[in-house]
Length: 225
Image 1 (tube, rainbow, N blue to C red):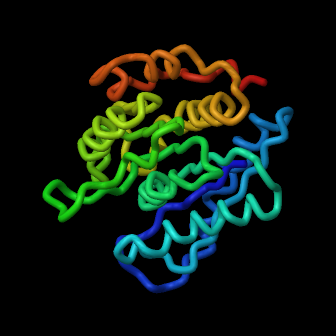
Image 2 (image 1 turned 60 degrees about the vertical axis):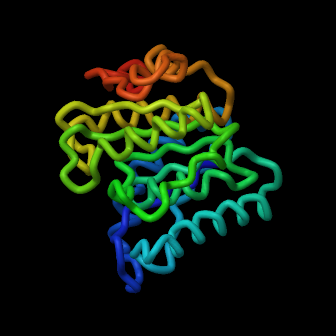
């Protein structure tokens, strides 16, 4: 099971717009197709509020969704896939007992000097992949690198890819980003072999495995099937 956690706002009590979910649907369909033969299901999580609101809402909603997966489907592995504030929520909720892997794309993280660092010890035993565009003007890629450094110490199964010259939405190299996500999901949930760059990123020591460049054309063979 993949649970998609959309991006949101830092502080808002308003209900999320339908557009925030609609833009996730093509991505959801692509992931579902990639894992179709393995029985993969993909759901977009509907938040109660669009804001982070001091960390309460999207994380709580993500954990609730994972609880629902367990209630409805039993003991199935869950991969949390989030973007922006949803990426931070995925990392925060990654300690849920059903979660075996986390993919955080352009995660929104607190600035250096925050009262408390983002927790990482709960990610032990999970496969963790962070993806960030080097030209992201909304969420600082250096912050996700620092988090990845800390997470790698608590959990060796952590890696991070950099998408050269791409921004927050990761649109410029969208095909490669989606192919990377599909490869990670299939490898993590179904014990398929990861593509060589992903396997290398997991195996490489910092900083190499945390600044792995996403090569142009990644996943072309996957997209042609």
